Length: 48
Image 1 (cartoon, rainbow, N blue to C red):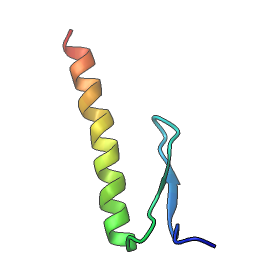
Image 2 (image 1 turned 90 degrees about the horizontal axis):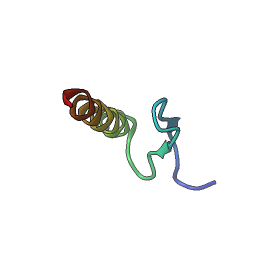
Image 3 (image 1 turned 45 degrees about the horizontal axis):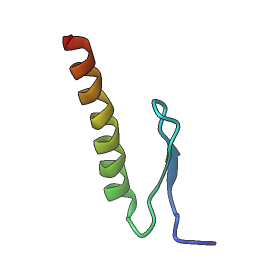
Protein backbone atom coordinates (compact mmCIF):
# COMPACT_ATOMS: atom_id res chain seq x y z
CA UNK A 1 0.00 0.00 0.00
CA UNK A 2 1.27 3.44 -0.93
CA UNK A 3 1.33 6.60 1.14
CA UNK A 4 -2.19 7.62 0.13
CA UNK A 5 -3.41 7.58 3.70
CA UNK A 6 -6.40 9.78 3.03
CA UNK A 7 -8.33 10.25 -0.14
CA UNK A 8 -11.55 11.99 -0.96
CA UNK A 9 -13.51 12.48 -4.13
CA UNK A 10 -14.23 16.06 -5.07
CA UNK A 11 -18.03 16.35 -5.43
CA UNK A 12 -17.65 18.99 -8.12
CA UNK A 13 -15.04 17.66 -10.54
CA UNK A 14 -15.04 13.99 -9.40
CA UNK A 15 -11.27 14.11 -9.02
CA UNK A 16 -9.90 11.83 -6.32
CA UNK A 17 -7.69 13.92 -4.08
CA UNK A 18 -5.07 11.85 -2.32
CA UNK A 19 -3.04 13.03 0.62
CA UNK A 20 0.20 11.27 -0.27
CA UNK A 21 2.63 12.10 2.54
CA UNK A 22 0.43 14.73 4.15
CA UNK A 23 -1.03 14.46 7.61
CA UNK A 24 -4.79 14.58 8.01
CA UNK A 25 -4.86 18.27 8.94
CA UNK A 26 -2.87 19.41 5.93
CA UNK A 27 -4.97 17.12 3.74
CA UNK A 28 -8.11 18.85 5.03
CA UNK A 29 -6.55 22.21 4.17
CA UNK A 30 -5.57 20.97 0.73
CA UNK A 31 -9.10 19.73 0.11
CA UNK A 32 -10.58 23.04 1.29
CA UNK A 33 -8.27 24.89 -1.09
CA UNK A 34 -9.37 22.63 -3.93
CA UNK A 35 -13.03 23.38 -3.22
CA UNK A 36 -12.31 27.11 -3.01
CA UNK A 37 -10.87 26.99 -6.52
CA UNK A 38 -14.21 25.69 -7.77
CA UNK A 39 -16.11 28.38 -5.89
CA UNK A 40 -13.89 31.07 -7.37
CA UNK A 41 -14.39 29.80 -10.89
CA UNK A 42 -18.15 29.65 -10.29
CA UNK A 43 -18.15 33.31 -9.26
CA UNK A 44 -16.26 34.25 -12.41
CA UNK A 45 -18.84 32.43 -14.53
CA UNK A 46 -21.84 34.02 -12.85
CA UNK A 47 -20.47 37.56 -13.33
CA UNK A 48 -21.09 37.43 -17.07
